[in-house]
Amino acid sequence: MLAVLPDHLRAEAARRLAGAEPVLRERLAGLYGERADFLPWLGDLMENIGRLHAARPAALRRQDLRRAAQADWFLSQRMLGYCAYVQCFGGTLDGVGRRIGHLRELGVSYLHLLPFLRPRAGENDGGFAVANFDEVDPALGSNADLEALTARLRGAGISLCSDFILNHVADDHAWARGARAGDPAMRAMFHVFPDRTLPDRYERTLGQVFPQAAPGNFSYVEELGGWVWTTFYPYQWDLNYANPAVFAAMAATMLRLANRGIDVFRLDSTAFLWKREGSDCMNQPEAHALLQALRAVVAIAAPGVLLKAEAIVPTRELPAYFGSAAAPECHIAYHSSLMAAGWAALAEQDTELLRRVVAATPALPPAASWLSYVRCHDDIGWNVLRAEAGAGDHAPGEPGADGADGGQAGGAAARLARVARFFSGADGSYAAGAAFQSSDPRAAHGSNGMAASLAGLETAPDDAARAAARRRLLLLHGLALSFGALPVLFMGDELAQRNDYGYSARPQHAMDSRWLQRPQFDQQRWAARHDGGGEAGQVYAALRRLVRLRQSRPELAAGAPLALLPSVDPAVLALARGERFLALLNFSAVPHTLDLPGRWTCLQDDRAMAGGATLEPYGMLWLARDDDAIST
Ligand code: GLC
Image 1 (spheres, rainbow, N blue to C red):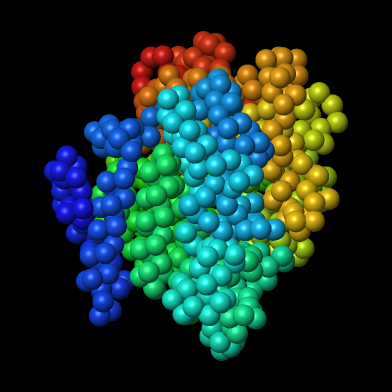
Image 2: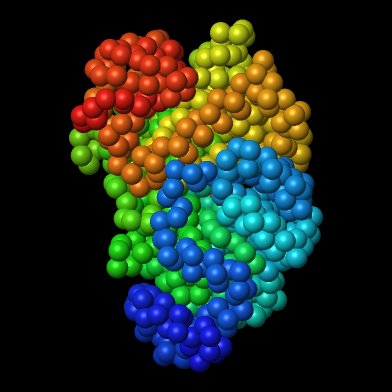
């Protein structure tokens, strides 16, 4: 690797190599070491990494050095994320550039643009079926536009996060086309089975991601004369990471994208990378080894770049995605349990699940962060909460106690199914959402809908109900912003945008209700954002205030200490950050008054408080201790 570098890069690269190469070599040897050609393969891989490092633009190499000098740069309380589809937010990449003012006004320093690389022709799962990783979707711009945007964002202090869809490619990707045409090397990039023998054996223990729209995990492809592994839609072919050529090609693909200026890779569907018969083929040790190897590649060739795990898995499986001090994995991971538990707390008017999730959330190593959020482009998946929802209801080993039953039996599943029903608007609930991929009322899968609609803004009959719905929306955002994490807002939520029902008229989207929460950016609401009399303006102002407060309180940084305090009522969450900050969040429809010894300031309105605090229904207080520190 060092031999292909120009002289001026060699010393620094040698230092990085010394740090990261042992883990890289060990993990790759563990995965592929028994192959006769392992060493020459590794040599080629390292040489290619060297070439890609040499091609890294100088501005990015300078940024690498700055970030290496401050490895925890993304843990700051000043970090705020925003997530959007390019076509919904700006029309094109260039149009996104014209929204930088908007992002800065909100305080955003991290922008996650959902897939923007050339997708499959036709249906493409919102761009998650990539036909070509080296080409921007022509409908959204060009590679030059991407490089121009990353440079503009960098100039504005905003990091760009891009999806890196490494579990699968589209069925019209060059590898899939090659496999169809009979090229054995291309066929070997996938898991292809000549008949149903092995697929049937795997299916015994596999779950289903889209049980209605795409049942089963294998798709028959005529030209292959066999069944190809397709965890998601039939046109998304899972890659076979047991083949070292897949790892080498995907690692290089990632570095080429990094060299275009992408700062953060959202590693899509990371849990599914390795298949093992008899298991659910999620969270396998080899998947972690692959991620540790990718992290080492980044640490050598593009060390300013962050990896973010999208692993929507039970809370207990999440910490492993950070790896260890000796073998780090991802820098950031979605805290999907926290997100789902926040919504469940609203439905149940009880914070028990939320408290269990917080209790099960370990402190992280330095320079690592959770990602907190209220909504994203996907459904709220309830099954990640099966362990927490079953705790207390079940004896160990009983179905439902730990999710081993597949989630559809036992008290935990029934409890989560009630939550899902609530968000589909059943039984007079205020929520206007849709159950995702499930018509069975006893099953819990996911719920769709924009946050404002799920919180009740769409159905609210009067001003009082609208105010309560706004408070629910802010409550969940307050949790995401005060929990120690990198908070990411979802496009439109800052303006209380509602569901987009138009999707059902679009044939390519109609079967996937996740499109409810993928509306076009509402220009009118945006224009009215400073109108304090309107819904968008009220939410926007309150959210911006929380963001600004957060920016001013170092104890709200991602890595800073967090403690749950005992609370007077199960509906109230009392979250202490450091010694002087307390968030009180009321998840119920009734007000609560709490004793509050000492002197406090309510940060939202600068009010001095002594002796006690009253929380409105669904109300939230961010309090700063004025005298002695909080005793936990
Ligand atoms: C991730 C994405 C989701 C997509 C799936 C398959 O979970 O967030 O939108 O459908 O991966 O790529």
